[in-house]
Amino acid sequence: MDGLGQFHLHLHIPDFHPHFPLHFPDFLQAVCNDLYEGYTEAARKVFGPDVAIIANHFHVAKRYRSEVDNVRKKEMRRLKQELIEEEYKKLKGAMWLVRKHPQSLDENERATLRLLFTYSPILLLSYSFGWALTDIFDTPQSKTEAEERLRAWMRLVKEVNVEGFDRFLNTLDEKMDRIANYFVRRQSSGFVEGLNHKIRVLLGRCYGVFNRIHLFRRLSLDLGG
Image 1 (cartoon, rainbow, N blue to C red):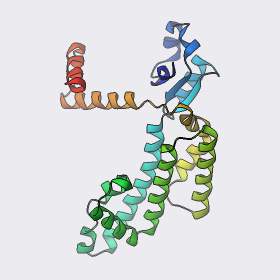
Image 2: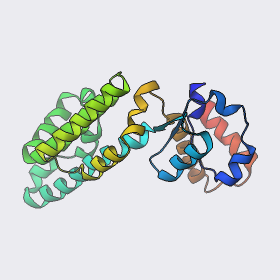
Image 3: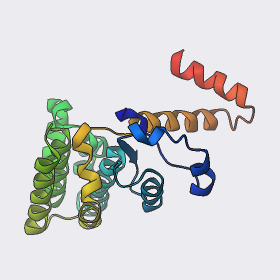
Image 4: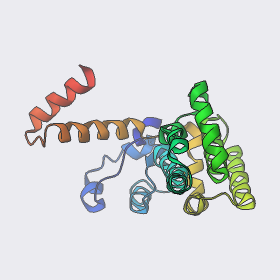
């Protein structure tokens, strides 16, 4: 059953392992977790070498997109100092436009981005390479093909000297096998991440819910209406 490994191992091995059903690992094929080494080592210890460890795509994408966003913040601070106020106001909403998928932009939004990139060629490079990476992850392909494309992307980033990806390049190099495992079945723990977010929002909105019955009732209403 491919999907059974799509959860986080937020459990301590000594507490978790003794109560683990012995038959479960027989049909478990993959475990999806974030990039934290502690969870990865826990999964290896519990499930053994035959179960694939998949780096959750949500966390991978979050890392490289944050790198692009850091370049945007740096460039916007620079432009705020260098541009007159009227020109800088024309870049209003740049944060959301840089994060928004290029195919979803309307003509006015594209015009704003073109103006921004005219002032910041550095950001244009980071933006372009960031979405190029998204395109690799969105394209159905084998693990071998994906790894080749990811390594080609890494080489090009270094050759062109694209700003902002230094830390992600290290992550990609060190965890390539786990990241490329995503392309085998395109599994992620997106459902778990979404559910965790809904619970955090619920707890924040209610200023803490300490009764488990009330918590599940509210969560059930949020999820199913």
